Image (cartoon, rainbow, N blue to C red; front, side, top):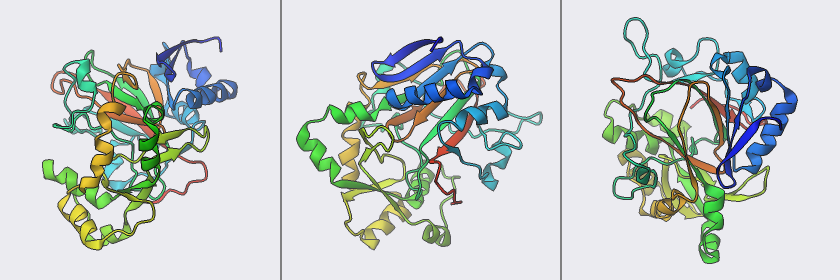
Length: 328
């Protein structure tokens, strides 16, 4: 590769500089970067002077080399989408009438790099992998920065391959026997407890979206490398593989938004997983494009001064190429 590359944290993450929009559409460059993405734990960033001018079509072409783009637009989010494209706008941009035209969830800014490590008392940052409650969870995401504040709004990433590899053999064996129970109803109810306007599922919607079970240790289908998996706001319990779920327990998790104590099996590992040895703090510049793999990473958002600064990100969600998209 004739581009400059820099490692982000050992073998986790790679940034490629001097990338052009033409590169994004070049099949040889796409193939080379896909291999690097897999080799470096599913975290790759590209940076270049003209990438801010990347069109939706070019971003889609680039994203397609990592997976199948989810192309269903939920009606509730339609006003937050780039018109005509399966690209979600995230940030605090507004239209001429002052109406928000992006998905916005305010989170705390980092006070120092010490705040990157998960704090069990505050449960912050909200480290997670995406949408494990879905029958076919997305394999990754693409973020393209259109506007970024000078300070804050970093995205944090953790290497769940190396974090798993660093555990003692006894802990590894125990985790390999477990599954995470992930429920959309639990996810929505939990969020509504601190954000009262957040909608919860009706009984009909809950019946149509039963819990999904995912392995706590996931063997990557491409690299074959095992990684810790299954932590999401929808994670309501950790159970032995194949163990039946008690309906009364599920009702409590879903209707009250309460996690089972068994989730501490994963949460207690988070300070280890999100320590300096396994994490990357990505500070955005306009034009940056970052792709991450949910099967080998965790990520977390950080905040900024929402009143004085503007942020706009474009996000695409990646599915496995043979994966069927369903509405929730």
